Image (cartoon, rainbow, N blue to C red):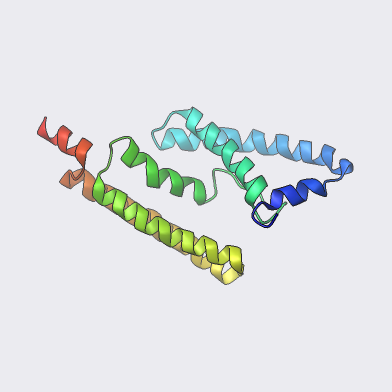
Length: 161
């Protein structure tokens, strides 16, 4: 199963790995769950959002990730990028300029992800990381533009009040 490498890992799983994997899982949960909840609170979201994000990212990476030994949690660049892309528009904190910017930049990030999936290299990983920093900076600028110029249905209603 080329697109779901976690299934191949599960098929070749050895019983003697279980005790070590349980300890590693417990340590990761102890570290990542509070961290994910704290990130959610810092972003102005309910802490439960961080809990779900942490767990879903770990499960998704276990199934779809290319490496069985890589740790993925809320400190990766993917979690904040997804949250920064979707949540401001959903909660009415931003409008159409932000949404358009987020979608365009998101497709750019997907192209980097696809290229890394097809042929990984350390140089491409560094470019992808640089792009993620630029991505978040431009999204923040678009959020400011939407906030101060009131573009979008929810923002226009609040400006009329």
